[in-house]
Image (cartoon, rainbow, N blue to C red; front, side):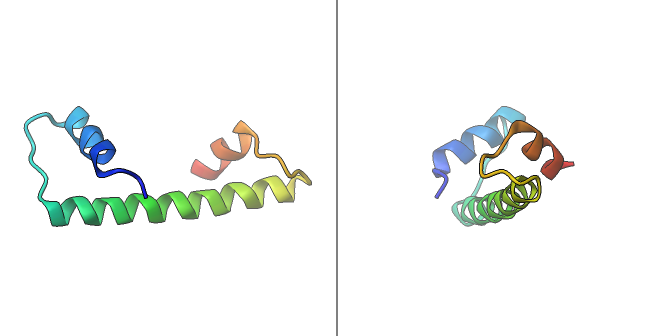
Length: 65
């Protein structure tokens, strides 16, 4: 799991005056992790499609487009 302190820091960097409730932070944590898993799946598919076992930066750029 991505540490909640890291997620709080990300939010604070965007809006220093905002407060985040514990339930909202847990939901944010789950959403970020779900996105990261889906992104990783896309990245791996792109590398395999290119006939590689190694992920390259171009795979990541393509996956987030």
